[in-house]
Amino acid sequence: MRRSQRRRRTVSAYRDGERVVVLIPDQFSRAEEREWVDRMLERLSARDQRARRSDAELEARAARLAAAYFSDHATRVRPRSVRWVTNQNGRWGSCTPADRTIRLSHRVQDMPDWVLDYVLLHELAHLVVPSHNSDFWALVARYPRSERARGFLEGVSAAAGLCMSDD
Image (cartoon, rainbow, N blue to C red; front, side, top):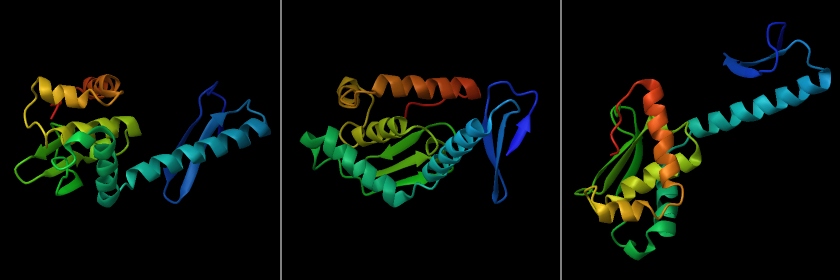
């Protein structure tokens, strides 16, 4: 834990090898210090958990989402594999309907769950409708946070100066 006289309200934390460093304003009381250290440790733990999402967990998540949003297409929305990849710099995910494989960019791993769900549902929808036609977008729109997630992804792309594909 490090106190800073320059900090007024912000608290941050990071890992330094095996240690966690929490930066807090110098004027915080001991009770505020304990509260913020606990809170920041929880945040780091949650972020680490998201980063460790496995391919098996991703496949299980895809199956749950398919059952919840595409039950009327149950026989078609069964991917052969769903996995994380590190070679997608121009898109958030991709689907190859011919071999029923779905790949998600590792950059989605640290995003909120509702954004991950949107990207997965977008790719699952391609198993039913390969193109981005109106039928495809109607399937994607079944997810209530679709527009919000698309806005989030557009914001991330804009902030990074990227032109990301919807696929």
